[in-house]
Length: 248
Figure 1 (cartoon, one colour):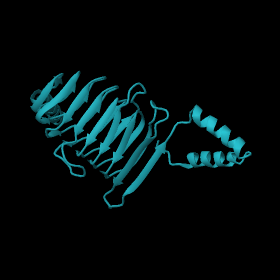
Figure 2 (cartoon, rainbow, N blue to C red; figure 1 turned 180 degrees about the vertical axis):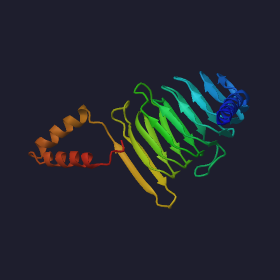
Figure 3 (cartoon, helix red, strand yellow; figure 1 turned 135 degrees about the horizontal axis):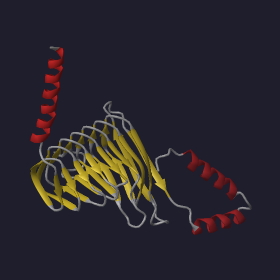
């Protein structure tokens, strides 16, 4: 009797799993305009949102693909996975400081993306980006005016400008990126503003300038002009750089 019950339970479980898969929304591929209600979507080229969009599942950006989600309202019930060299644009359809309708119920996870544009959006999970970017062209990486219930983690991105500005983050925040990789003598300025659930804002202003040939000649001139006293300033300057928080 027990054996029959176990066999019956196993059959019901198999039928339940196969049935749920059979009635699940089919996966789709996007290479052009998209709107309406869909199942899980994989972007293989350039996918542009032209009207309100609901994805009942995951949004996956293949390597080198582009998802343009500026403007219309977007709701993704699953996760967003961004591949190597891909670009994700989501939100930026409200005034600064105002949350828009765009919502991701899961996580946004990017593996070596070329760029991320995330603004005025709600993410109920984590936002995680590892590596990516390029030194061949000036790309931006703005994460602005979002409500992120989980963690915000950005590691190893290299590009022209990036900023994490006025985000409400419920979890931890870890930022370590590289800027000023193209225009060596151009000052890179990034402002980081986070507001947590306890209304305790943290503000970081990071300025970074690469040391070039002009700076070397200037230091040599000042060392000679000050009879070596400029060496003290060089020591203090380098110690200040060393003691800065590892934000860039």
